[in-house]
View 1 (cartoon, protein in one colour):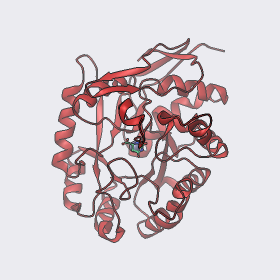
View 2 (cartoon, rainbow, N blue to C red):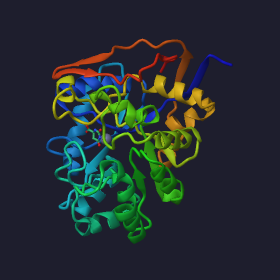
View 3 (cartoon, rainbow, N blue to C red):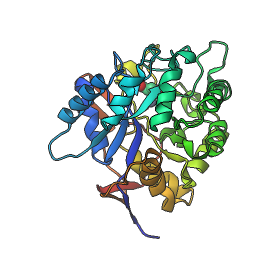
View 4 (spheres, helix red, strand yellow):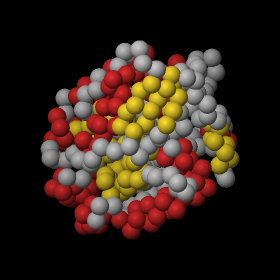
Length: 346
Ligand code: DOR
Ligand code: ZN
């Protein structure tokens, strides 16, 4: 077996970069290996208008260290007041590549998200007309729904009705975590895609809770039972066009993670490619890694594949356990076992 693997330079179809000092610290971690990323708009306040997305893009480019190249693919945060014409203009200018739907209260900085879906109908219809994808955080937020069931209930009660009402709308099910998500995405035809994170291929809910609570494994949607992790692995490693990488790498400082009410998010930008190479190798699917990280995403979004490459080599990677930021330290996701692939060149 060859001990190197060269693939088309990957993209990350779901990434949190934040702003200010945190942005400056985490951006190089992604730009080192990834050519492009879909940038999540859940800043405080959120990125709602085309003008705000343009300004955020400028701040990202200003934070990029000299000698690195990276293309941020901007998104707008959908609110009940979003103006369909502003969305259409931001798309027509080439600035915005997707609109993000957070059900109100679903996760970090989602307070301005959608509660009443009738109020966003005109925006969704405009997006369907112009071919602009909707990225969906697929969890209901009702207190009476168990947190481990929130994805399945969302699919049945929100996503499926929404797609039946607007069948032409292109939808990305973000960070799916269950076999229900896998099955629904697979059956959805070419208007439906799904991203899968690196960490959901590696941890199940036991990793969070057995032997003491592990705040750095806590994210949303929360990791589910082992059978769901295995379904995600089968989907990601299958090479099927529906599934592509969205790391959901989400930096929070250690002091915000390790406390009585800790923030949700795993930070995987630094070691994602090493983690994935090992996952795909373990499942006998290394030849499908490139489809998952570098081909299926651009195909769904109607963008060209990258021209550069990334080479992995069978050797223990070396990277910091924590990233120093102006706001404090951020812990890099630790799978709990030694890694065996390093990025040799990118
Ligand atoms: O774990 C998560 N962290 N899930 C999300 O949906 C948001 C993200 C964040 O922004 O920290
Ligand atoms: Zn996210």
